[in-house]
Length: 355
Ligand SMILES: NC(=O)c1ccc[n+]([C@@H]2O[C@H](COP(=O)([O-])OP(=O)(O)OC[C@H]3O[C@@H](n4cnc5c(N)ncnc54)[C@H](O)[C@@H]3O)[C@@H](O)[C@H]2O)c1
Image (cartoon, rainbow, N blue to C red; front, side, top):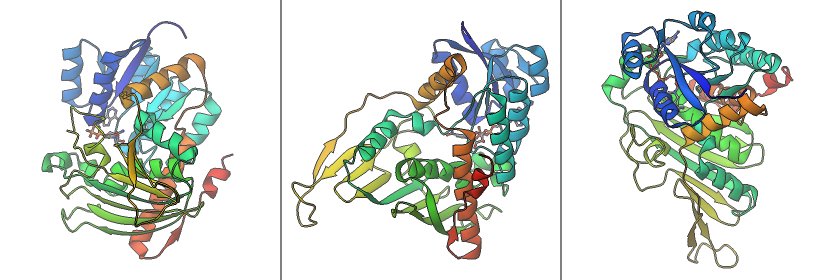
């Protein structure tokens, strides 16, 4: 298509507003309408001078959008995206791809048969820091990736939990809401996960969903990783609180949250520091830090630019429904491991059935 792309934002909540702010900075894309049944959505649309429509069926009938961003609660991802894609409207769908494996598999089918782009919003993959780290790892700069530790302390205020879905099993909880980003990055760097072990607790908040979890992963390439996550623990050691991706919502702290250790060198993120030995690795010798240079860019803008390119020129989404479903399968294995107390093998065969 030529001309500016009119984008409908469906769900004007926390992340929907980030997309609306991002659209205001984009060339070649503009906010066409907001779809949200709640009064704050209508008020925001009025203040921005765009129409507010009550639902996706009305949007499709109105024919006023070339593309849509779906930023609604997880259990609505499938029905909303299905309606849009079947109407020929390209979709940028927020993560996680769906609330269940069955819904995610249905989305793969629709996306792969339909011919209209479906990009899943694992926005960190569009961050130049992640691109650079991926490039360094692929180029062998840290040798074979041996292990990683990832921390994610996100002290969320009580107001965050006023939205009931954030406390509801199958929809909320930091595993599905936040850890899915970390799983996506670990798979991006290491390749597929082989087995998981996990401990989860709801002891701090007492909700039906977990508030804290510790997870251990093995990868098909032999690497190991641990992740600690909590939405009730205070500390700056989290991607969201260090990477500066969304400074309006989260101040960035000058510490690291991800540590990758390879057979040759180490890499910390988001500061992109490569820790290398002089000569052969030897734990008694000082490691030399080098900061890998990168030109900063807003990952939400980069993600929308990629979405625009998919709409105009076609191509493969950087994060497809199939790729994002693998993240969901790993998460399901983590939840099963936490419930059973046993190691769980990650079974990606449901994805083969859809080849
Ligand atoms: N990429 C990220 O970093 C990121 C960050 C936060 C949330 N998310 C994801 O985005 C989605 C939304 O999360 P949030 O925190 O913004 O939620 P939220 O509760 O703040 O906002 C959801 C909005 O959707 C609206 N809504 C509900 N049902 C709707 C429907 N059928 N049609 C239109 N609007 C509807 C609600 O009124 C609300 O305004 C979730 O899937 C979440 O996992 C992604």
